[in-house]
Image (cartoon, rainbow, N blue to C red; front, side, top):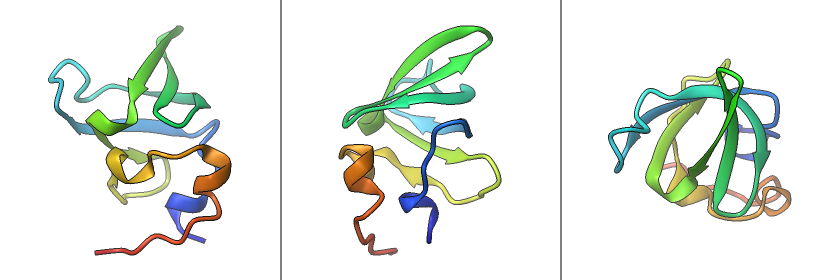
Length: 85
């Protein structure tokens, strides 16, 4: 199974790049995921990130995930087949 199909809750998310420069280099533990957002806990605060505006990595993986490609509910994302370009 690849990183796209794994459960991301409890893993550390690191924002690599973003359309919004204030989001770049944010990191925290994934607390919740919805169709369009990922909520992380960063320094005791909850931060909601729009998937479509970030590229990120998850702990124990060096794969950069483009948030625009994972804009579906987590329960649907885990069963989808992704084409790696």
